[in-house]
Length: 268
Image (tube, rainbow, N blue to C red; front, side, top):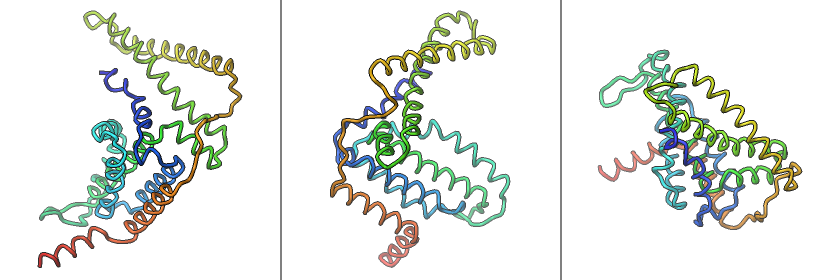
C-alpha cells in the first residue's frame, strides 16, 4: 500500500520529457500563466461557484494539448484533497444562513462556501501539477532563477524537492523491512513506530551528507547551471496573451449567465 501510493513520485518529471506543443513552450511563460490562473481563481468571493466553472477550460485544454494522463493527475489531487476538506468542513456548521435554493432545496452559505473552497482547490492544484508535468520541477526552478529570484532560494527549493524523494526512498526501505519482520502482528505498535522514525531520521541525514559530498567532489559551488537555452517565441506570446485575455474575461463577466441567456433565446 505504501509503495503503491508513493513509488511513482517521480512520474511527474518523467511526463515533462514528452514532446508536445505545451512541453515546447518556454518554462517562464507556463509559470506566469499558471500563477495568473491561480491568483485569478482565488480572488473570487467565498460564495462564488458559477463564476469558477468556466476556469475548468484551462486545465482541460492543457490536458488535451499536452497528452498528460488525466487519471494520474486526478488521483494525485484526490490524495491531497483531505487538507481542503479539513479547511472547509466546518463552514456548514458556522454559516447556516440560507442564501439560495437548488432544485427546491434550501442551501446555506456554509455549504456554498465549502463547495467553493473545494472547486478552487481542484483548479489550483490541478494547474500546479500540470505545470510540473509539462515543465519538470527543475525547469520551474530554472525559470524562477531566470526571472530574478535569488539563487539561494531557488537552490533551497530544488534541494527540498529532491530530498523528498530521498526521504520517501528511505521510508519505503524501512517500512518494507518492518513488514518482513512483523510475524503475527508483532512490531506494529507505537513504540516500534517511534524507533522507526528515529532510524529514518539517521538514515536520511547520512544519505544527505553522502549526496552533498558527492556534489562537492563534482565541482558544485552553490550555483544551478542548465544547458537549456531559454527563448521567447511567437507561440509563447500567443499562449500568454490568450491566457490573460480569457482570464480577464472570465473574471469580469458572468460567463455562465451569458451562456444561459443565449441558450434560452435559441430555444425560445
